[in-house]
Image (cartoon, rainbow, N blue to C red; front, side):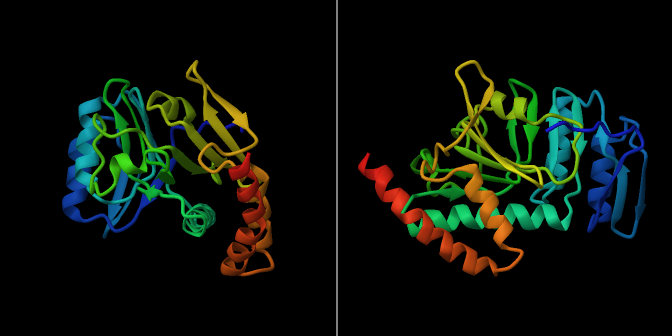
Length: 250
């Protein structure tokens, strides 16, 4: 998908920002031409900042704490994003699909949601829409926090691109060695796997769930125009069960 570059006057609006958090954000990013407006918990600020040092990016993450803020950091370029309802609805439903499949077919997974993933050596960081351990679930079982230099990377990332972004996030995923990415661009879903050359290539079947393909995701999303989410999920499991049996026997 071709992304449109935002202008230098593109802004993001954050709600529920306490005064203390606002002061912390200013301390971390104030020197980067942070044009902004703060009014009773609502912070409107420039969405794209340049030449942000790694230490200041780490300070920002510390200030934000557990607060969810979708972003990408790529070797000094910091982009902040404010997802819309349609973005969050799609990513949560696809996430429900993954989790429902895992439960129904007894596949061990650990969802770490939108945990910020960082790599100091490559100066990259991002907050995915959803992230899952599947093949490496046992390696992180029971861990309550993500340790970038200790834990394996998640096996699967889910990304929903309803609004445009200025930065191509895929090189960041590759740098952190994310093996599989599902991307939905408000029209189509595509599955990608990381190759030995460090690039991503499109695949017809998931690596984590080899009995499902991108068209299965799109078909379920289209059904939501007529049926409830729970109805769609129940029918999906009925549809996938014969495929799972076939895959298991191959």
